[in-house]
Length: 417
Image 1 (tube, rainbow, N blue to C red):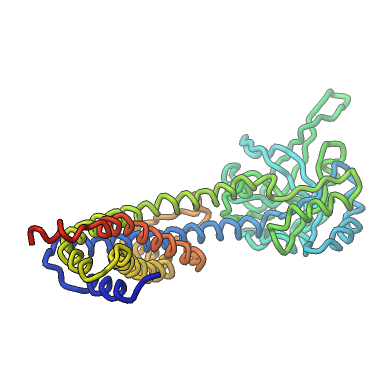
Image 2: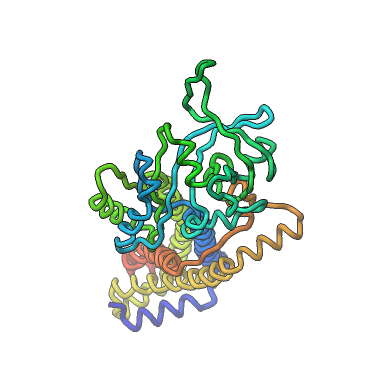
């Protein structure tokens, strides 16, 4: 327990004017180092939280959290019944049918492999914001029998296509005719071009057609059909998957986002953890400076320590004096760092935008980072974790110097005074 005399003397040493200005400078440098380390940690973690949130938001606003699949084309006629069944599962909020198959688009001698998704436009709008990302044309143009196609902007650019152009879709199967075996193909009209900017391949490798047109197109091929589901909690996806798998017939297979993209989001979480550990070393360096500062203070105060010992102060009291002094330096540095870090984190987006506008540069490109601005999302549990870690490191830094002070022998310290 900290005795009042130790608290009083420790605080007095902290605010007193020292004879050795070098020690004062080192102490101030330690405080600034802790403040800078804490501020950098808060800002970096906030920016990483911002990137993580934006990636998750953009990804899950387009991609389904849970997918019900079957290799049978019976889903064309039964999807409404299956949808009613899966909607009874708690946590499932929306369902939309789909048919998916592989193909190859060709136009003007240019070729590109794609995944063809057959959807019902009105139903797809319930689970995805992709229809709202159509820049040219309309997603509602995917009507039955129209054989229209909506493709991504990058895919359209690579094939030189615009709305109204014709494009040929070749399927990975052939048809026997009196003239021999020829590949199956179908001409489509480009009726829409979308740009998601998500970076997950939607703009480059997926083409959307009408659900019933896809059923005719993949009638003899190995197409996969089923339902795309939206749920109210993405982290409940594994549990909902198990429930649906037990409910549906054996011909249905249920998967979720964790099986396909779980490793990617796990890598994001691991990256944040590693950045926290690495940047915490900055605070560790400042704490090491605090060790050096307190060691010099102990040497400077050897006579004072000896007098206190002769007046009856115990080694524990002497030790707590310097623990308090170092803790105060660490606490002040942590508080300044938190204030600066929180202010910077809350204004990081505006600050970077201002720098970009001032110098006419673009630090962040949506083609690389999915967004064209620096996101920042301050989470208070990160702030608490950083502040606690910094203060604990500051306390640990005081132990060795305080222990040296408690070992001071009064006779040896006063011999040359």
